[in-house]
Amino acid sequence: MVDFIGRRDRRAEPATRAALRALTADTVGVAVAGLGTPAALLVRDWVEDQAPSGTGAPSGTAAVWGSASRLGPAAAALVNGTAAHALDWDDAAPSMAMHPAAVLLPTLFALAARRPVTGAELDAAYSVGSAVFRAVSEVLPHAVHYGRGWHNTSTTGRLAATAAGCRLLDLDGDVTAHALGVAASQASGSLANFGTMTKPMHAGLAARDAVMAVGLAHRGFTAHPAQLEARGGFLDLFGDHDPRRTAALGERLEHWVTGWVDDYAIKAYPSCFATQRAIDAGLSLREELGADVDRISRIEVTLEHGGTRPLRDTRPGNGLEAKFSLEYTLAVALLTGNVLLGDFTDEALERPGVAGLMARIELAERPPAEEPGHTVVRLHTGDGRLLVRDVHHSRGDSHRPLSPAELAAKFHQCVGRGPAKASWFDALHAVPDAHEPRYLQTLLAGPPAHG
Image 1: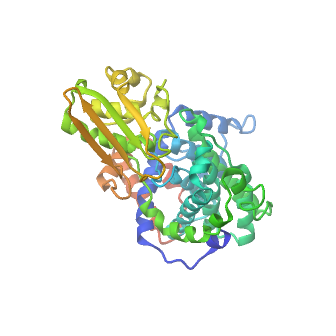
Image 2 (image 1 turned 120 degrees about the vertical axis):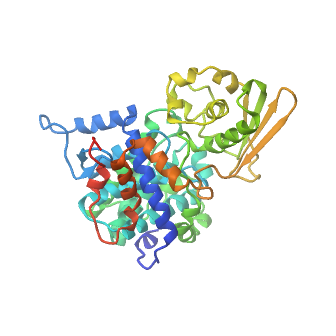
Image 3 (image 1 turned 45 degrees about the vertical axis):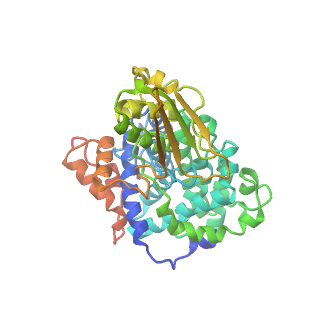
């Protein structure tokens, strides 16, 4: 992995640059919207409370995205990462449960607070982090790791963000090995906290700890340089360590360094990725069936093996929990014809008809041997009709991407409208194209509040 991170002879790929354009604008947008959530507000308040007595809010070099506030890089990574994940509207990887951009971009932009960077440097670092995220998850393997209740965005995410940071700062192999060792000892985050404020903080903590690991190692701080594969190391603790699988790590890293562009999704709906395909199916069924949901007798939803793992198995008690309820999100799609931010308030759960329709939805998983990566919704009506939708790629998946207009519309739903906000979207979208090194913090802060 260290050799992979340090390689400098890779050719720039237009596909990774194009994907990073969309992810940059989208991640900053959802983070700005997420800054107003209780989770991000409380984390930010705590960070500012750490300032020395009598000095007011802490100051630093790294922007809190969409605001005039500046924090130290690690603190900014914590706040921005938490905000990026707070609405669960951030990116996802269809192949396995993770939210790469919500960890990688807060890390990279925080580390860029003290030096100018080019678009090519960001692209290379992001691609390295994306590859580490996926390849290490495969080696664990992901099914074992996630099955034990570990939140992969938080655990493997620390290694991925640290790898990306080492690549951005062009650190040598020895320093990179120690940075990865530090990050491996910081890994944590449980699925039990899904539906709580702690879940989005996992992304913020992963970004903060990556900034810390890179910074400490750069100063000479040491860790086990082979912490991943060592006895009692990351692979032992978090997976089912198999040397034969580990031996394929180099090959998988080289695959994913460009292959990640076929394995990312920009969510169209502000809820858990495990709900996205079912929502698309529900919207399509509503077009055929109409808005009269009283005709529905029952709905069977079948997900891939392990597909229900991130979902709630009880009725949501508040708007945050509702983001992890496939029954709720599918019911809203069928009732209203869309799933929007406003559907995840506590009050929205009491909308007439929602509870009754949720009670008619049944979830199941396919056996492990059957094809992964798609959701089947079977809708039965009282008069004996059966309507079926089989969704392999949700709207916003790299195989079914949002159009430029749809991406911009999502951004403006998050940050507001107006000429200044439109210009900001265009400028963020162009960050990966910068040929000359540039400081990014003023851009990340966004236009003035009156704009």
